[in-house]
Length: 474
Ligand code: UTP
Image 1: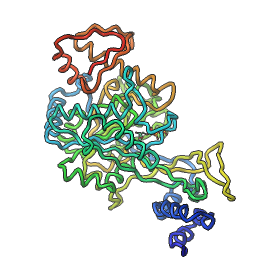
Image 2 (image 1 turned 135 degrees about the vertical axis):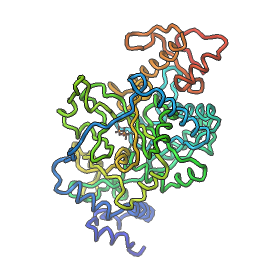
Image 3 (image 1 turned 45 degrees about the horizontal axis):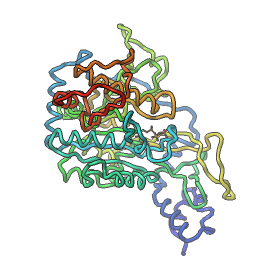
Image 4 (image 1 turned 90 degrees about the vertical axis):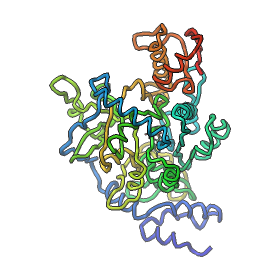
C-alpha cells in the first residue's frame, strides 16, 4: 500500500503517534485504523486542545449577569389553569396531525450502572421486569393509538451499542411497534487526548474514540437523514428524553402544546430542586437567553440563596426532557454563523498503550474526553419556554447500581405512581407515608401511560380487580 495521505495530515497536525504502529499492522487492521482516523476532524481537535486542554487551569464558567430563569408553574402550584388547558389542547392537535415524533438518546456508556449491554435493555418494571426500551415502546404505541396517529420513534445509539440495540428490538418484534417507524442511528465519536493534546490509542490499531455526548444528537439527527425523513413525514416537533428514565411522559400533550403555542424552538421541563445541593443543572438566564448551569459550576453560596419567602432562588432543576423544533436542530447542526454547541472537557481514566504498544490501565485520569450537552442549545433557541413538572410524574432515572437513582429507587417510584393512579380512581391502596404501596403491582403503558389514560381505562373496566401482590394491569 502506498503511504496514505491521511498519515501525512496527522503528522502535520502533530498527531503522528496515531500511526506509530501502522507499518506493523495487518492490511485489515491498517484499513480499520485509517477509517477511524478519517472520522476525526483535526482542525476541531486542534481548536479544542487550544481552548480546553493546553495550559487550562480552572473551569472558568462565566457567571456574570446570571439570574434564575422564569418558568411556567403547574396549576397545582399556582400556574394559570386556562393556559395549561390551552397548551394541552394544542399539543393534542399536533399529535392528531402527526406532527410529533419521539426521540431517545441511548448512546451513553452507562458506566455508573455497570450493566453489560445497552442501557435500554436493562429490566426496570416491578412485576414484569420489562426493559427500559419496552416501557418507552409501549408508551409511544399507546399515545399513537390515543391520538389516532402512530408515532415515529428515533433512537440514537453509539458505535458500541448500535448492533446490540437493533438486535434487541428485532428479537422482541419491536415490542408491537411498526418497525418502519422505528429509526436507529449512531452518534458521532470524538478522540480522547492526553494532557498534551495528543490523540490516544486504545491499542496499536484502535483509536481511543468515545461518543460525543448527548449534545451530539443534534448533528447526528441531521447527518443520519432523520431531519429529512421528518420533513417528508410532516413532523416538525421532537419529544426528547433519555434512555434511563422510565417514568418520563414520552409524549406529553401539555408540554408539546406550550412549545407550539409560544412558537418555541426548544422547550424544557424543570422540577423544583429537592434541596440546595441537589446535583442537577440549573435553568438560569444570562444576557437575555436561557442557559443551564451545571451544579458543579454554580457556587454553593448561590445554590443556597433564597428569596423573601424562603424559597430557593435557583430552584429550577433540569431533568433532561426537552421538545425540539426540527429546523432548529438543523440550524444547530449546520455550524454556520458561529451557531454550534460547545464541547466540554472531562478528565477520565482512559485505557491506552505505552510507547511499545503494551496496554496501560491508568489508576487516575490520564486524558481528556470531549462531550457536547444538549442543553447548551438553549441559548441559541428562539422563544424558549421552561415548564414545571412534578418529579413523581416524569423523573426517576437509573444511573447508579445502588443508592440514589438506582434500580431500587426507580422501582419504588414506579410503584408509587401506580398507587397514586389507583387511589385517584377511588381504590383504597395501602401505602406507607412516602406513598409506597405494600403490594408489588404494575400498570402496563398499554393500559394507562399517564393519569388521564389510566383513569379512562380504569373507568371502562366492568370488574375492578383487587389490589393484590403481583397485580398487573394491561
Ligand atoms: P449520562 O450522562 O447519564 O451518561 O447520559 P451515560 O454515559 O449514560 O452514563 P455514565 O455517566 O457512563 O454512567 C444521559 C443520557 O444521555 C445519553 C445516555 O444514553 C442517557 O440517555 N447519552 C450520553 C448519549 O446518548 N450519548 C452520549 O455520548 C452520552
